[in-house]
Every structure is written in structure tokens, then in C-alpha cells.
Image (cartoon, rainbow, N blue to C red; front, side, top):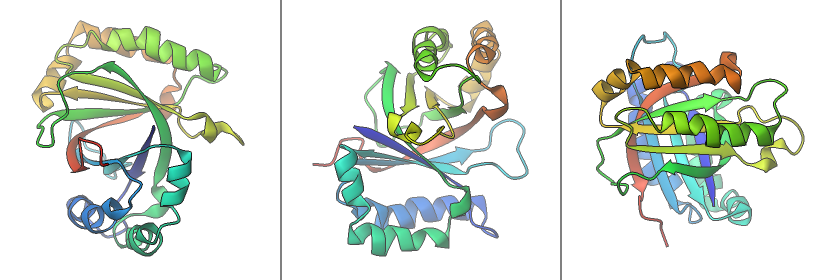
Length: 232
């Protein structure tokens, strides 16, 4: 199954709050969710956490699940996409700042069953592998070495790594190699985790397999549009 991630930013002149409200309550409901090939659909909206950047790189992420490449291609040819979702996007999103990734999900900590009304918060960590590191070595290290360090983080409720699919390397380098998602009870739990020796150990390991200048993370809240059960 394809787990597609779409990172988006408000169009010029639009506040982050208005951007997020429109995405969740208008675009997602009236347009994107109508695309029949989408099996599950989630929007993560950015939550202010720590020192606030003047212009956050992204204000939210759409997570879309599709069965395979054939259905993904078919979805882009539907009237629901061409005459609906696609035409609506310029009303709220700065499309030139959008990043789209097709990924394969690796579950490191299953946690409790997903809930539509969950209050958990989620760290999104976008990364690019260390220069010169083979992609296979990066994937193995991320899952089998670094992942084990992250699993020790206090308060961690759920943890997945979304590795960019091979198709994104067909004619060159993918802009990113992986997005990790880590769930916690609330912002206070994240703050407590970041004071722990386990977090220090995990952070110290990052330069061993990542280009730190490209690493970027932010905290989000989930809004289920379709799901968490898969649509038939």
C-alpha cells in the first residue's frame, strides 16, 4: 500500500489558522475525500511548539493511503481530482512550496488502535541520508539501529518510519528519504521526553546517518477525514 504524504504551506496573505481550517473543513471534506481511490485520509495540522519560526516551512501534512500505483494513477484522472481537488488547491495552498512523497510504512511500535477522536500529538521528522551513504544502508540503519534508540524514548505511544518508495529515485535523488512519526500524550510529554538521557542518546546518533542541515521536524495534531478504518 502507498502511504502518500503531502506537506503544504498557506498561500501568501493567508494565516496559518485560516489555512488549516480551510484544508480540514472545506477542501478535505468537499473535494479530496470524494476521490474514490483514496482508502484512508488524515490531515495533520502544525501545533506551535518551542521557539516559533517567523515563517514555518510547513503548516500541515495530508496523509493519503492508496492500494497501489495503478489506483494512484487512476485517482489523478478522475473528475473528482481534475475538476475538484486540483482546482481548489490554489485557493489556500502555496503549491510551489508543496512537497509530495510516496512512502512505505514500517511500524516500529504499534501502540493502541487508532482512534478518530484521539488527543495524541505527533512529531513529524523529515530526513535525508548522510551524503555518500547507500540507500539500502540508510534504511537498514534507520530501522534496526536508530529505531531501537527511539523506542526507548519515555512516553512514546506509537512510532512508524515512512521510507520514500523506490520510484522516487528512478531518474535521480528524492528530496527526502524518510519521514518518522512519533506519537505522545501531549506537548508536556514531548517536553519531558526531550529532557531525558534517551533523547540525548537518540539525538547524538543522528549525524551517523543523516545530513543534519536537511533535517526538519515539527509537532502536529491529527484530523481524520476517512478512517482510521479503511474505506471499502
